[in-house]
Length: 393
Image (cartoon, rainbow, N blue to C red; front, side, top):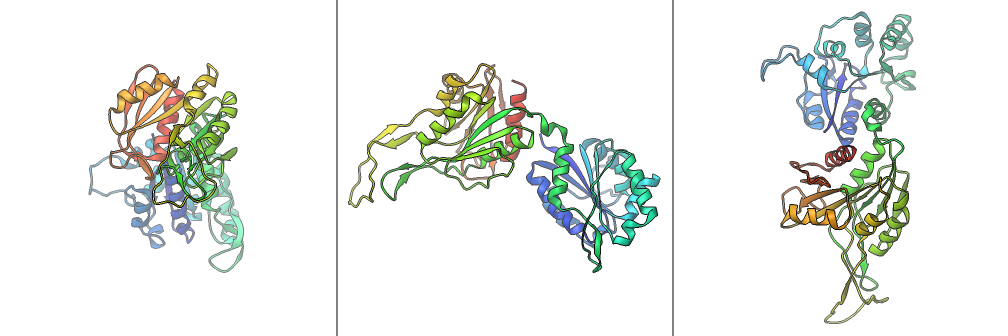
């Protein structure tokens, strides 16, 4: 399930940076809801945030153009972190005094979630004694204050007051979401991408795997505290920067060696890669020049089955079953045959599922026989679904 984050945007020039913050949080897999003050709309449009967050932006306490609810209370209860970026002197002063005269201040005070305040303003305003008193009062209430940095400000001055960068704010949000640390101390190995089986000096056998699913799983394990090793084949997915080790391989045999040499030390192994099932019996060093080319193929090593034999009794093995027919039956068969604990089955003929797309449609099956189908969702969300299922095994 997505983690809900509330982003409050107030009326400062740094509001444009909040666009990057919302984008970063969405990429982290968060369900982001944006509240804007009237002054914030003078700097960035609500439509911009709606496009980035995929959620309607709330700007008015008294909108009646949708189903009625006590919206500031519902948002306050639903969101697990509240971050205000930028936070103006006006907003900080209101919160310090308990003034609630708009949707953002009302929702802020109604929420019991962790709160992150990111001040941004002119240096003289920031250093003013009254503002500093208000800021200390807000910090004393339990909010985390991300102190602005020294830099060139919009007014032309150089000094303290520049809002911290969106990436740093996103990292603080990640820390505030305590459940992202539920795999602390766990060693995890994830495979991703396709393998390459050489035919000759220029040709090879492979498949359409982009590595996006495996990378999403590796990234979410790392986000949630695990030490992650990624064994990566050929892929187009961007590598996250929070992994302990990335081992690049080419052939299925190289992936087999990399995985089986590390698997006994792992708490979790996730076989999300798409290794080639066959490799040429004969591989030519030079480019073959012929009107016809007949290949004899042999089976490659079954990496998942090997891990199923190597893993310790307490370790967990997750495998994938990409099918075009008899999805559940085939997936259950693989679960038993490979001694796995969880199989992620997907029918690659479905729209939005399978290779080289950003979404997937999966069904999870565990050793108890429980079958849990899911609707189409982004692969980063599928990753969290898999991690959550592992916690309950």
